[in-house]
Image 1: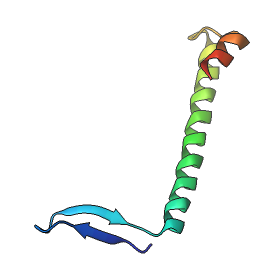
Image 2: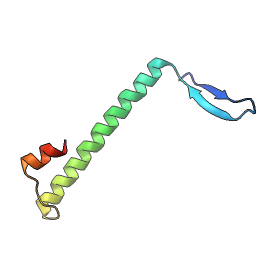
Image 3: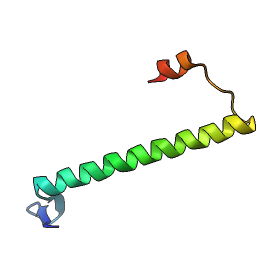
Length: 66
């Protein structure tokens, strides 16, 4: 990864620059991670419903949350 550091006049680090391609690759990875976390949370919620720890939602309630 080609990283460039940007500092102010006092030498304090203020920013990091990467290529647009690298940024897009990072965005794709973040989206995949967020999707995986959402699936994990849904699976955990399903387990809680099956064990009686959580009340199941009606389809209309689920849709309203989207």
